[in-house]
Length: 154
Figure 1 (cartoon, one colour):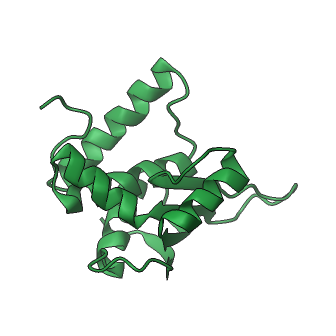
Figure 2 (tube, rainbow, N blue to C red):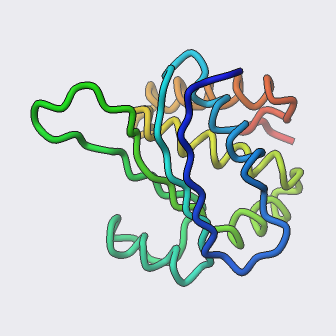
């Protein structure tokens, strides 16, 4: 799944045993495969206070959420930019969700990263039709990565 991906990882989390650069890159490349040949992406791993602050300031939400996507919006006239945007992932929340949902931690990390990258590529789940398309892509990508399909009933 080779791609021309420029990836910046910022680890601002105190959580131990976070996915490494290679894993995060592999999962991001899987989300980009066939959808984007070249991309620049930043991922910031945060703890809950910073995640909650980002959610409040930029989305008007309360508390931390597992992933926030900030798509790059080019300036007028800019058409050839590989920058797709930034992801903020709340590490403790990802770990807690995996535990609560009884799914492998790596599978949930991969799902959250794929979900965020798809948002940066313009996919959303704002209505039923869009959600069906996005969730179908997520299932396909996660299965290709060897993980169980998300959103399946146990």
